[in-house]
Length: 116
Image (cartoon, rainbow, N blue to C red; front, side, top):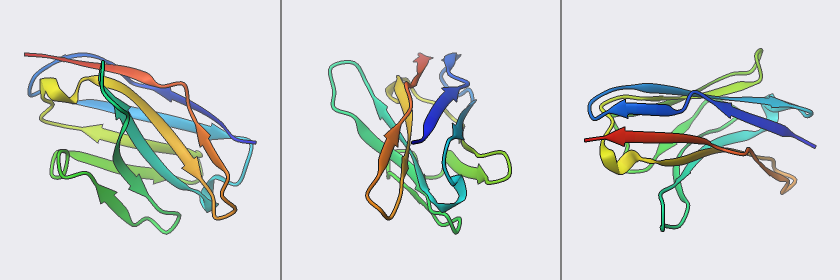
């Protein structure tokens, strides 16, 4: 079992920055692929970025060049640095941990609101 807790969300003006954190406990964090997803009001949840256990990263086109995902396996934490934020980045951001076994875990989410 894996327990994920996100933090770092808030209200920011367009063009600003936020750094999200997701702390994991309960399993071998270093063996997981970690991802960030977001869900805007009235829309489906969408994938934002992920990072493999070897550190390879992938980004959605909408955030490429503005967001950076990273992980600290000693702190069992994954981060999402968000720069040049836009109003369309508003949403509930959740982190996800998935393992080769097929196990999949979600955090409760943290709200990000970008004002224009």
